Length: 185
Image: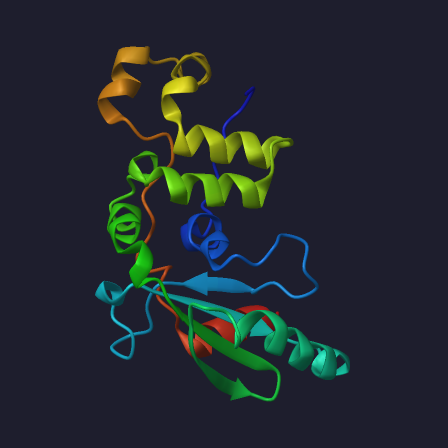
């Protein structure tokens, strides 16, 4: 590891989306993911909301994709059609409840072994993103690298424990109008 990833990224897309078991590289990926939607799905409900925006020319292909990978997914709960080209799929992550609680606290290294393996398998073993993800899930192997980059002691990093920032629960909350506006820019 030579440098840090300093930009904010949607934590649910990195740490929770892989739990759906949808392989990386499928034709359609959510534009964004969330863990709540105002009072409809509060933050304490262990949900993953996947927001898809589809180009009109891909409508039929997306319908087939949704049937194969989304609505038949074991964790699928329901779908909301926002309009003709915007869809929100809700998945129930109760089976990962312990890890969801760790996620909300930014304790990614405390995920269960099973969850860590699912996430690592999704991102693969090579490439920069894989290395970042591994450092977030297994920080003990990266304290020295981060210590060097940040100019702090390994002991200080060990006290903090995590090498990835907390999820911004406000950004992890779906806001329909804002999401659609951002995607039409």
